[in-house]
Length: 271
DNA sequence: ACGAAGCCCTGCAAGC
DNA sequence: TGCTTGCAGGGCTTCG
Image 1 (spheres, rainbow, N blue to C red):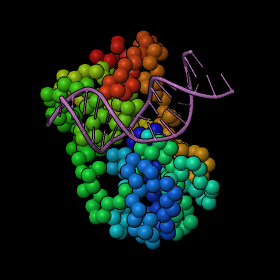
Image 2: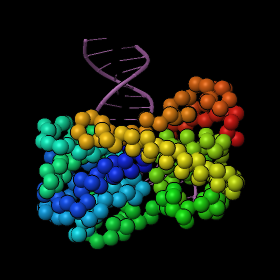
Image 3: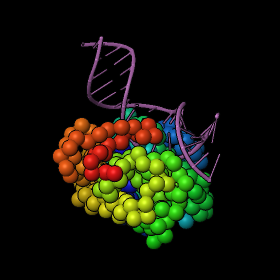
């Protein structure tokens, strides 16, 4: 399940294969994704030069001279770079073939992802328009989170995972960051202090950066094979460890559901 | 404006 | 062994 670090790692792997090159053709085998792959996409991209590949939230933006290809990996999606033709598997939806012969294969078994087209400025697309800042945006600070959270009664974990507030914090890293910051996930967002939001944002950045670094070590294996960038390279302190000892105090970690998402925390270390 | 719940989908694990 | 059931997850969408 791609979280932001996995998307970032994918973008870094794609850059040398796409930037400055042309899309020779698009092979669409299965249009069924969260929204159907537009019927006009293949014709639209044929022969088009790629200027830049960038990440915004968990979206991969392939910027061309004509517009932007917007890709989301959903829960189970992946993009793999194949050095040569390989027989497509059951859930291999789309191939992007470059003028250098690289095949970039989009696969998404659960079909929560998407491939869409936006003419002109990608930021104007409805999916991107209302997104909050990136965690590293200078305008994203402990103070700004504190201000936005006033009066909110929903859990701070839900607030942290709200892409209108801050992007890129999925369930796994929300759990980890709240543990690192010593904040209980179930507390009302509006009751968390200014200082705590400062600690929380620092923890978010640190845990995402560590995971991106870990993803970087898998980059060299990204081409061909089954190697995929992954967050599972990082040691997770609480996620998936409900009932096991807390790495801080040794007490048992508690597992609850918040907004229907699995939530793990230490009742002693997190207040 | 906010918040909660529903929904999309497949693979896997656990229970019978 | 083969069924059924539950769960996982991001994030849009709907409803209150």
